[in-house]
Image (cartoon, rainbow, N blue to C red; front, side, top):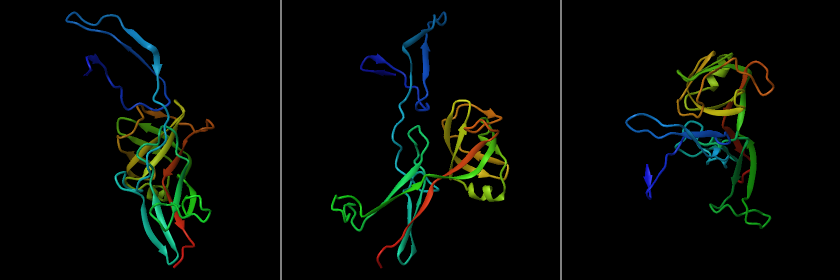
Length: 219
């Protein structure tokens, strides 16, 4: 495309932190001329802060808040649509009687209460053995309990040893041996004989999201 008289092309859907080399050539009616690399030869999208948390079952709505007991609230938190290019590790939950979140008893204009909760839970260890990009399907050694956890629209994280990256996927359906995921992800190739971070057979399967109980509230 052209902008201000200058031609440019945006290379999209790249994995943050992963270097990409770029080269190009010009063509006319005879064919393409010699290729030339860019200066610098490579670059990479930077790792950023993640987007805002979402619902457990939809990226389009916020985390869900409900009454847990007469003195407690429950918040169900889903992973952000974009993790910034680095695996999520926790969510910060804050609560306050004021919408300005500045009622701390310390008088420092912070929230009345806050806590951190894990951003994921382990579904199974060393259980994911294969990913087929053509069908967007994982093979894994699961069971009925694991399959029940992998409900449609829930997000999962799987580590790929060939590029040492963890990728997020949205579940479409699951059995005790396969997981079919949406094609809206950044992984660009299939992988068989998957390994975990310790080079053991099978990659770990993590279910993204968390449920936190805000307890001890006044009635």
